[in-house]
Length: 356
Image 1 (cartoon, rainbow, N blue to C red):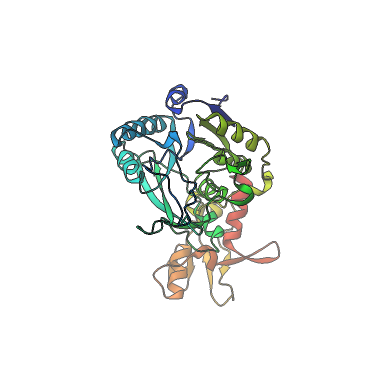
Image 2: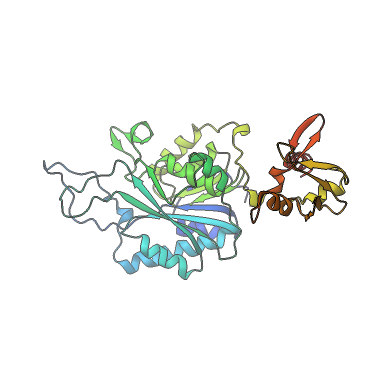
């Protein structure tokens, strides 16, 4: 397995996948051929040629042939995905519905479909259809019971403290990021780093191992390296493989101090108030107060508190005082600690930081 860490291989993924040990990866990102079925070469109204996807790797004899290909790599990916891992698959209307069908039949558990909305899509030059302005990503866990990674709080921070929605606005890959040789694109469908940044930040942690079976020019590996994740990729085309190698080699990792993600509250250790009493951090018989010291409660030996005729947990008594069904006692109650008046939650956080 150590041979796979932070490396890429040139070859056919259907063959090389079989050599990978099972349950090797925390995350898989797959950008497979879309089977776009483009017939005649597209032209603009001025009769100039459109740089479409005419590559042989995107051409299949039939839908049946494409389905057989898809099932092979999806089965192998499930085998090498860790039990609590997840997979991202990207596609367009040409293939994404077929891939979703296969994912469900293989008992992956679909978590979300994400719409990548492009703010600079290629127009529909013939004027016969709507402008195809988006691609679809499917995010799925290995099975229904997988305890997959989802960095909810980090995504909220990324989105100005709002829940991250399932429609993402990113430009297509262009400018300096777009790899070119002699003025021509090296890869016809290079994905933007911003898209992979969000995916990797959302669904992996520092040190996790990410796999891309269709690496192309290396975007997944580049972003993984920047974010302090391990990576492994397979690319069949020698030209793409060479470009990916060069790109990865010149990628700098973000300093380790800046790579931590905010822990979700659900994943944080659960420390009951009673534990702080048992450990003597907050002493039985002492008082706790609301912020304005208008109300106070006495701490009992069993971790319950009493305020006049009310007694129970820190949350129950706070809710009774506030006249609500529920209330967060950790932030409502305060105490004197080392000369400062602090929320009791700060004592819990100090304990977690020092001991867990």
